[in-house]
Length: 177
Image 1 (cartoon, rainbow, N blue to C red):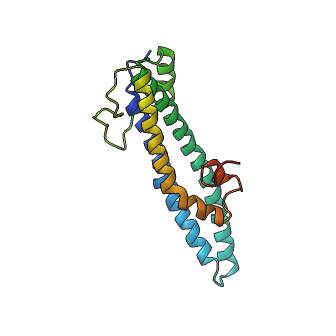
Image 2: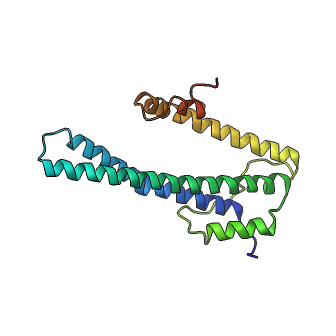
Image 3: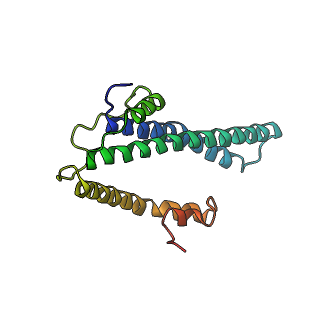
């Protein structure tokens, strides 16, 4: 079994891998795809139109797989975050099997961001249900802030027809049915 794992570092590693895929790879491909769409509005020779069409298809397929990989890393990060909340909030240590599974999936930590040196959660309570409640409240507060900041983005995406009707509702923008 592997030695003790710093769950916060493991969580940051997975989130960092997700951001790397989205910002370093997917975003530039999206920009290039947008530029190709603008260029295709002009009168072009047939071969140039064919190249742009082929490049667009390849870009869309590549973006699909990048998003799937990024979502996988995001999901792993969320799984580790929940383990870290239980460890920090209730003092429950993950089982050796859980740690071995995480170590196998994550591998070595290749940090793209510096390690978080202070306590990750602000609660001053001792390990127990009160501390877990405060940690959950802190996470909900920051998640709510993120949702409020992203609301205009989702409204624009919905307005452009990039989402299904339920997409913004799933992200808490239009409210529940």
